[in-house]
Length: 118
Picture 1 (cartoon, rainbow, N blue to C red):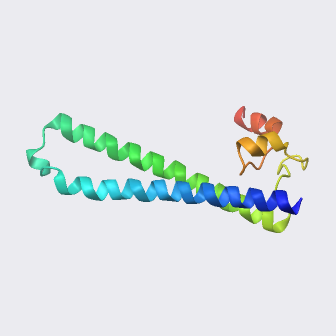
Picture 2 (cartoon, one colour; picture 1 turned 180 degrees about the vertical axis):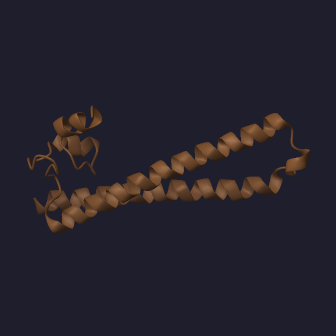
Picture 3 (cartoon, helix red, strand yellow; picture 1 turned 90 degrees about the vertical axis):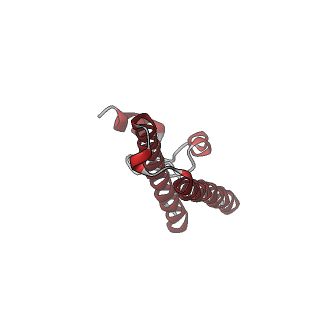
């Protein structure tokens, strides 16, 4: 079991690093784009709207990514405290297939479905 948890920890850490790298890349793109944009007063309204939409999408993606990073960190903490792979709602083991698909899952599939239908 320890080997499996160590593999899962490494998988979660790698996932966290990829996600954090993507966010950093997103921020680098934002910084570079500002240097090449015309001043707001010279910008066509449609271009300005497109720029605002891009910014809103980036912020939404960033918020989602930050949420996943928090979930990954929580999963790593559960590995440390011995509760990883146990459903937080029913206390039953979370099937390995679910953890393969969502390694930071805190609920078994039945409890996740019930949560989504509330």
